[in-house]
Image 1 (cartoon, rainbow, N blue to C red):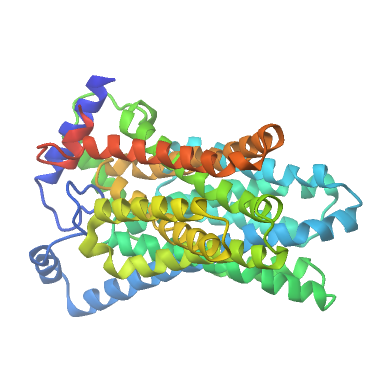
Image 2: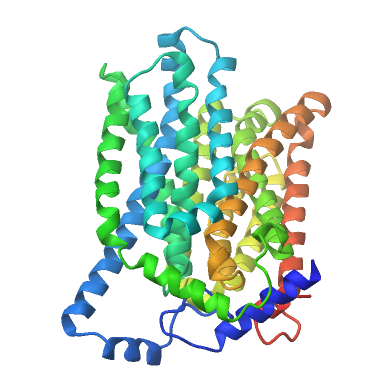
Length: 454
């Protein structure tokens, strides 16, 4: 294990010294992209037409990523609204319908565990197109209103495709200048899709439209994205080949899988507890407010909706100032704000403190995930970044399933009075993992990457 981590540090430290203007995939400090001198050198190598095309293409790539995440959020949120309709149309109970979530999680996990291999085998462009195609296949599967046994398996394709899209686009934006802001905007657009989708779907159902029209709409936009992949990302494979060639020149040891790097596991546990805290609070706070604190049901519903809205707003608001704060500073501030919000929520049973605590907690939790991915790109080698992000996102998704389940069992056995202490324990575990992460990037190391070797 120690030899593997030392190889990782040596490999990244050597690459960092090259200071190539196009080597943004492995940064060894908390800065955001190439320097002004690098940009000037790069521009001198291009004609004015090439500069304009390159700038326009990057902007379109960012737009591609934002629209993709809107569709991912819209799809995830639409399923929750459609479950009652599916129950009536197919005459099945909630237990059977809950299998759609299991199928989606399995698909996500399978793709995440194989993403590093697939990205190298297919190349960046084909890998992104493959994810788009699989996701589109799942959307079309829903749109055709198949028999129930097929309907329950369709989310496997959606989860598989979503894992690839999230890994590739998170990695792509993490390699661009101003990456922390871009990643926060990216996940903010996911939240926008998740916020708008239930409203649109419910209005279509209220107007007696078939629920398949929801997926025809998502499918049409996904098809447009699929068609544009080749042109928008035409240089991605060349950049990947250059990065891998550089990697081989600086690495004399056999390649190891990303799962052998202890930092990947450490960061995965940090986001595992993050996802568990975020999802458990969002899923169980309504029950806690109505049954334990006897809050009005309508008001409690608005407070919980405000929690999720605050998470999206937090990502959008932190983006413009993320460069000044830095990745570490942003996460530090967000963790402090999360603790303050939970303490306020726990302090009294007054409506005002309930609302303030939930909103502040949601606002501060939201930016941690995208900023964490930006921080990760400073540490993990470029050839492992896609696989690392995919694995960590998949591993953290286990927290979304396990910790809310444990919260329900605990509430059943010990009562809802243990809900907030349980959330606080998860948050303390998250903070503890982050402190360990910081201990490996501080303390006199010349680069962030060198800290991994300890």
